[in-house]
Image 1 (cartoon, rainbow, N blue to C red):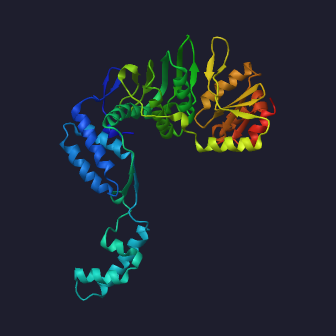
Image 2 (image 1 turned 180 degrees about the vertical axis):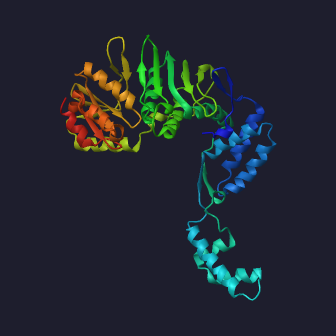
Image 3 (image 1 turned 90 degrees about the vertical axis):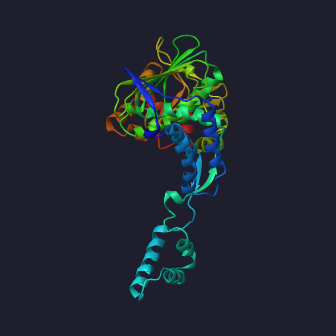
Length: 405
């Protein structure tokens, strides 16, 4: 992500336009290559050394703001570690105490003698601090452990995408329209929605076209920063699709009630690769535990799309998990702390579809208010096929509710 000082955009009337760079411009490609080279060959160097090397490129480039943005994206791909595994605060206190005591007792100040005295008094495991850096716990002393390298052109595409992602921290309502979307792309988008815990409303009003509506962070009352980051991370999930339009209401600190509109014509490129191979650890553990404890039911590997709602107001949902027993299929949908609006809508739909083969799991943090908790727990469908959970559902609870089907 780019910080506020690295984001560049223009505004005309009620719209904002994130600035992008030309990914085929040779000067930018050369700059990206030089920055990537600094970090790719920088293992073992500390932050200060890397900063000095990169600052030469940044300050000599014709547009330093762009150079700083590219450098920030490189830093986001770095893994740093402290140079020494030492309790620096305690070590400094010990060394300062010894220094003060020596200065009180010394007849005259002699720097070389002062250092030799400290070396004799300081324990062996703290000798390095006397010679090196007493403030090695500060960021400038962190050592580069690993850098996830990338091609220069990919770094430029990341920059253009980051200019858009920043605005998601200040988004209200968002809508994504997809036309002629492939089934594989659609399934990938749904998986990313679930992965980032963005429960969306998905409607199909015409054949081959979908509208996905997501609440932005400004629609929430709490955890807006974290939710905004999740939303920003979702943007790369759809930009590689063939035909899409995206619109969001944006309330920037100084510019309120603006609209951000984008489409596939912007030329944005995703950096997400092979997401289908990734399985979160909690899902992996649930699969394993369920296979051990639930003998009658099995988890279905390919979760289908499920239609929900009345005729003319149908919504497509993509369950978190699906279970099978002989020819029967039961799906499970989980609602997390940000999904209050979506949960109310689903409960209303279940009044008209009491025979729906759907388990409803609700994070306890979502029903924190007593009025909402009473509304949920008194719902006839939830009483029979719903449950509350902390962080992630328990296999025992899910297995017991499956017996109700």
